[in-house]
Image 1 (spheres, rainbow, N blue to C red):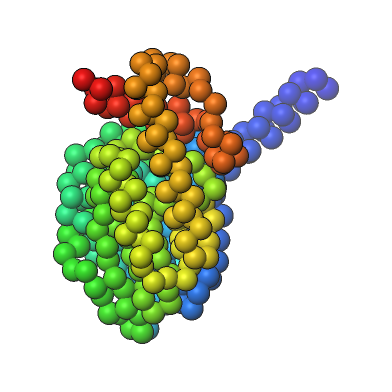
Image 2: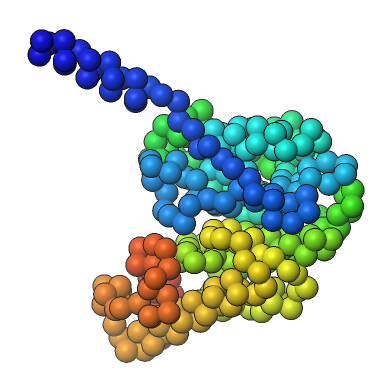
Length: 305
């Protein structure tokens, strides 16, 4: 009897672990023709398969504009199927907003469509893409199976695009990753900020050229005429509330690191400081704060000399 039970458990476990991994992506229409696939406000893990990013697509009368492709081939494949369930229009523009892995490693699923990125973003993906991919394999495991870096083939050199009934404005920034594409659909008033804006989730800082530059870019975003904002991570919001939150966090972090350096605190001492009460409830707040100190504090120390 015990041997039969052991065999039963072995078969059961084998069936569970051999079951295909599924993101089960869903899209929500937030404005006319405009769909958002919202990721979790978490860090990369085998539990979420890297699905922590917001991707989006706009179905124009002429064809689809896709904004970012997700963290893996599997994600990109499911995203393509999801788009196909909404429309039979061709995917005419695929946009990689910047070079972080959760925004471009789904490119393989869209190889038959032109994939655009800012010229500097294309260079950064070519330089760092393989390292990002290898790290994602370590972080989320089998979700990445068969994923390879597929470079954006088209440098985005225009600032405007008219497609069907929609007028898109492309805005080049640098504050988050050194090359950051923001997309404004002037027809619907939806602003796609990618990782220039995080909302209800602590932001990431590994490739920011400077927090003050990021803040300056956010001030530019605040002047735009839009109704809804789709951040790179976190829920869709109305108006400028998400920009205000990101701006406030960056200003606080910049002040925290500057004052700590002036006081001669060590990196470990800065890491142990409590978070501001306005930000300690953000998703993954403590973890991202520690990372930001590790990424940035040496710059502030060096500025003292």
